[in-house]
Length: 194
Image 1 (tube, rainbow, N blue to C red):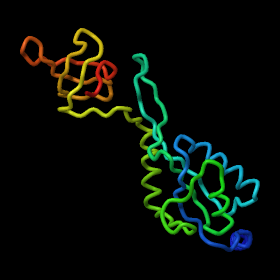
Image 2 (image 1 turned 30 degrees about the horizontal axis):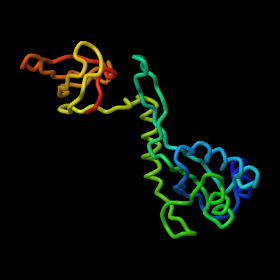
Image 3 (image 1 turned 90 degrees about the horizontal axis):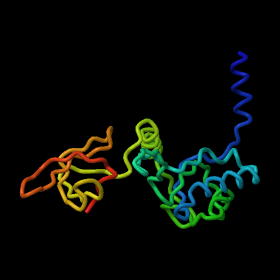
Image 4 (image 1 turned 90 degrees about the vertical axis):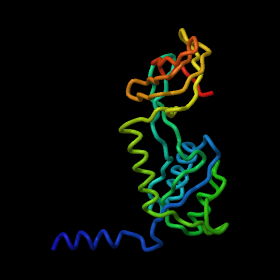
């Protein structure tokens, strides 16, 4: 019985209004984190925490080679976009629309944006989680792709990629030496796309 009373008390506190849905907000490219911060500050100042849920800047972790060393960095996979969970009302629409570095909402009518589905948001969240668990390489290599060797004994030779080992950050490249194709194993940092 206490549990029912506890739930009833909670239900009484929950405001009646529109349900929260996910919307895509267009921001200045490179300013997504600033928009997230600005939105949170404006929501707190306006006292509208109950009308907003989560704010996501879709990012993934990527591995890149810097000076021969592996470094994990963060990359936005939807540059210029921020996902906002909110109850779409006039006051919330105005708050988001008039936030610094926001250019507007994506989809729907000019003053009534269309929400995206929970499944689409879940797909983005899963992609973000995969990036944290197993960071992807910054550059994707494909077998058959032509590359130029930029350092080492085969500098300025071109060759076709025969194999890729992302765990060791190495590619096997078939380089033509004296008219014969010779496979050479190189670090990602030693080759570049042609």
